[in-house]
Length: 128
Image (cartoon, rainbow, N blue to C red; front, side, top):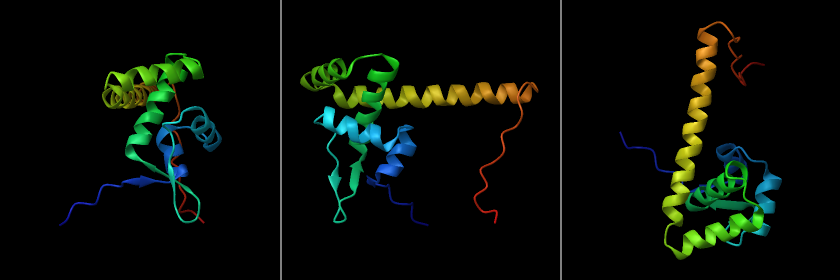
């Protein structure tokens, strides 16, 4: 059996899901960070590549976690780029966000197991 191909391109909706950001935030960031410049398909829709998603995670960490301003985040990313570190730092930001999400999920699971929190209802989209 052949392994599934790795997805190379992502729609803005998929990127929103992966980054937990709203489309208007991504569009605004594109105007503020020149390195966030997704290609557009024939229909004019944004098409993001993996490296752009990593950069979005980095920008998100700088703005939301480290509390940089837009200008400060732009300068910090430029600093990383000049030092040849942007790829590694962007991956670290992605790993840190994944770890934080996992930690929050584990804490919620512990509260459920202790009976302190109700079990969340599954998102059943198949029900008619």
